[in-house]
Image (tube, rainbow over all chains, first blue to last red; front, side, top):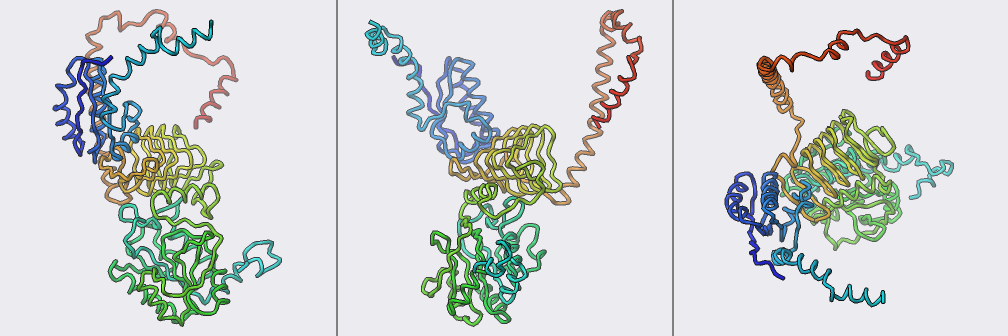
Length: 132
Length: 401
């Protein structure tokens, strides 16, 4: 089962300070206003990230969650990783090694759940045999 | 040299007077820098940064002084932070990177004039070399320079050169202590060695000092077992310091901050509210912002060296990592800003009070009048039940004080 909604991967600029965070937020605001937005931010090029940049990322995630969507981070540069660790925000986001994994994760949840409760699946079938 | 052999009745204690006589005709040349390398944080060599309240440089000079070395000359390419090495009676010279080794040779020649041999040390590594034993080995070996090695056989930048061996000294110093053509005898030391090549080594040295592996004692008073606090440090009563930890001189730890797991805050550093410092070293004059979580890191000079991520990151945002200042003007500016904030605060309070009064005026009478019960209770004087109540009140007052 695949979701029909697109996953949008957005590359975050090299520097994410107060001014550039605002500019980036204006860029992504239309994407956040979709119904159930599925966003991936690629942070591989980030070299400078400050508190305003982190605040912007949290704001974007909050907006996406409010519309029943999600924001995931991918390919974090060491600089971004350290700053997210410092600000205790790394635990708020789902972080993936690359954008492809992050995009795939949006469609990976539902089928697994369905498979677990399928009557002909291996798990239930084997359990049934054991009981018999 | 076995120091206990000097005095068989000493039960293993070092006879300082006798050690001093062993090294009284020995001079020491301590070199700091001179090579472009990674052993720096910001512009400062790692040897200049404090480890539990005192820098590796100062601790090395202390060791030389304790060993009884007659005269110590220090040559560096960076001006050290306070306390200045000249405070422990050694000559200090700053030389530029270009003429560093020529200046080192001149210093060697000066020291060699009135001595038997010269100890040449380059920081650097923190090496707990027994200098008296090394000089004794050198005397037994006869001629040629001697180099110290760690227990694993790694070469250290600690040499003993005879005052007569001017040409070998020149070759060694002009070759930036790397010339392998000179034949040298080895002195294997069994003391602790840390090469201090990267910030991770500085952290390891701190951990080893806490564990008692390295011969480094925290500079401060041990307020609780495993918690050392330097003079002038201020720790908020709501902050938590979990042993082992070190709070350096004139540090400030604000409300709800946590310092734990062998963390060290060096002098004049500041930890803001609700910040957690775990298994980290905070270098002098660093300020850690509010609500930050610092784990397995070395922080200083607006840089974070994350040991877990193996990354060094420059932080420009002062809300996260900043610097404090010991400068007079910065203190004057903060005092002035506080003074200016007092009238502003008073103005806001008077405005708020007048607004509250105006709101109360428009409130219905019923809300302003108190209930009869409350009125009675407020009118009735509260009298102590007995004499013991008064005593308790007095005790409570003194307890608070």
